[in-house]
Image (tube, rainbow, N blue to C red; front, side, top):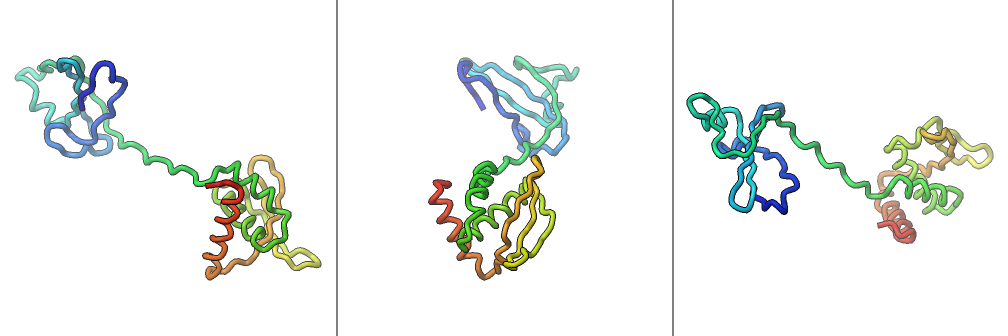
Length: 178
């Protein structure tokens, strides 16, 4: 990969040897060499075998390389998925819709609470039945503040998934969340 000096900021290490095209294994030693070519620079990464094959009889011939160094290959960590909805947005919407008794809002609040539970922001502490109304409630605690939150469990069935998904999407659209 060649770049002009003005473009030179960084070049990622290759995932495979430039000479034999074999992928580097995790922890494998490689040699990087930096060359000057007219108006640009070139970085080449070699596996140990191919680098040795380039050496002269005394093992010290780096040719026209400006610089060379050895390293151990580590694969790039997988990219973190971008959160579809930020935690703060979920918390804000949950607080807003928690007091509503409309069925769509009850479903929405429950789904938001489940999202925060999966992110370890809400910790389920108990399940209770509200005296007098018979509503099933999940007792949650915010992991950071210790604040208690009661969220109605609407007892959603798998067959309701499409309907609830539609309700959630409509409410998110109303809130301007994409």
